[in-house]
Length: 113
Length: 118
Image (cartoon, rainbow over all chains, first blue to last red; front, side):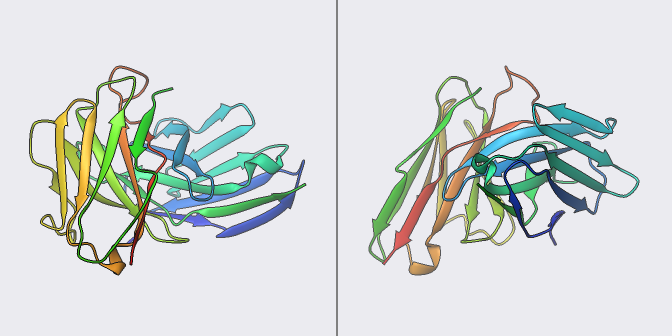
């Protein structure tokens, strides 16, 4: 089964609004990552948050991690049309030592100008 | 950041032929690369882990004789889809870890290769 599950599956907002996406996972992790994928393109690593961190910022991105609830959220503030993309959370395979990642199903974000 | 390239970016082939996809780390050495497959509107599924100088490790359900992986150097891994069939049509993405930069947990992804088998 999927280790990471994003919610919502699709999100449509107006430029300037904030976008929040959530990710839940099942097993214990030592880190969780968020990636962006523009349509038909490869992935871009956005941010990594470790299990001992609760919140992390990078520019307009804010990621939170709640290990007790096995969930994470990605907040994009002041969204732009260029933020339109699919966003995936990814977690390392449990018990793995070679950093294999399991990806969630993704949230398709559409930012309307 | 670290750059990973893939070639070709897209390929169309006839059923029964073999197709080779290259994944290169351009500005770093990668002892480990990963190959993913992504069907339309779906997530990435890990196919195999490519290890420089040794055999690849395949995920459950992935046929090693169908998807041949060669990691002959620290900057190049290749995925060959042998005897391709229409159901192999997909978006193939590779990634690599740059142990000399940032966190070893961070993977850098290639731009992907769109394979269409007629």
